[in-house]
Image 1: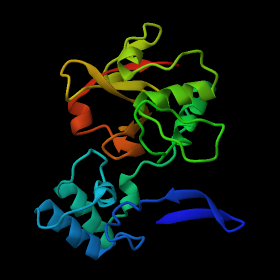
Image 2 (image 1 turned 45 degrees about the vertical axis):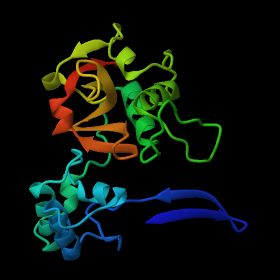
Image 3 (image 1 turned 90 degrees about the vertical axis):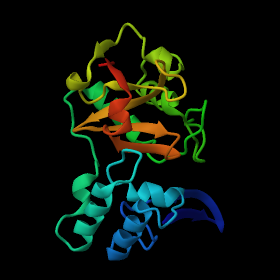
Image 4 (image 1 turned 60 degrees about the vertical axis):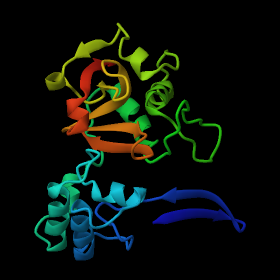
Length: 226
């Protein structure tokens, strides 16, 4: 779905919404979407980028049996798809951390653009890459740090290094690169309950994903800013 803000006959803002599980674009997840998702899994159907985002219920960058099963359960009204989607973060009790996460949420679904970060001086949708999202969110709360790459942020000694099992909401999480093994190539912000927010080149926008699959396999470490 596309929502447009029109002023004096001119489109000033446009926002594209992807409904989870809605593959055929009718605004809801239904039995038809389940059949399409099953055909895609069996390689009998091709999907475009938006359809791939809609069918990836777990947000783990791949489509599996669990994804189309959840669409089926939703279609027959046995389980709501909302049970599988992360929405609003739970307050942490740390005002700076909460504002940091809120700033990241304000960028949700902004387009992925390498080497960019969102600018506040324009109403036009601006893009950002993964480290740009971190920089933008920190800058929104007045944190004194410059624009760096994910690899540089991953080594920042003032932030405590944490393991996978010790992650808390607001921690930065770093992932190894596919193209350069052993080096950090991606960063996100952990939200708790096994989810994180990041600017994804795969999905083409800032999105919330489950810390599973590729992300868990390629996880390097976390850094505690607050």
